Image 1 (cartoon, rainbow, N blue to C red):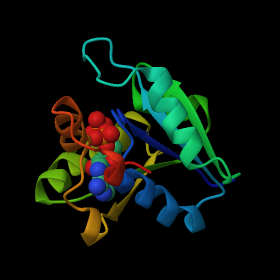
Image 2: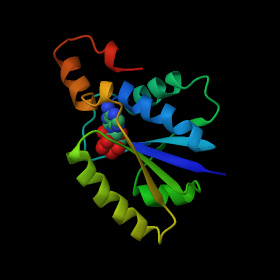
Image 3: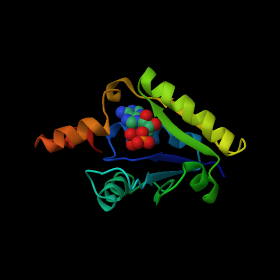
Length: 147
Ligand code: ADP
């Protein structure tokens, strides 16, 4: 069973996130979209809203599940028996960050969690949750950026 975890804040889940999941589907038997609960970070969309938005986007996709977690991603990955950690890379900034995280997670999991990175599709490389939150807080239409 090739199970991957796709962790993130997803505040909110964007068309860029959805694109990464769709493109990764042929690689895995199951992808668990794991919405991280960070008690120190104020989110714009509630946990319930974020989950609902993701569930709706993948309602017809049997290989995708949505779960929430708190604590370390490695611990949650172990708990759900996921051996692969899926992430997206938009820029060199993402790359540097993802490299550090991948190295740390491989070490913390004693080699049991392998990070798989997909490059952002060029048409979505500028899309971020931050952009969507900014648009939303200034009463702009966010529908082009969310699935
Ligand atoms: P986190 O708060 O953990 O960085 P995010 O919700 O911002 O979580 O993003 C989760 C993952 O999705 C990260 O690997 C991020 O680089 C990737 N990602 C975000 N936006 C895009 C996009 N437009 N295209 C491809 N990957 C993306």
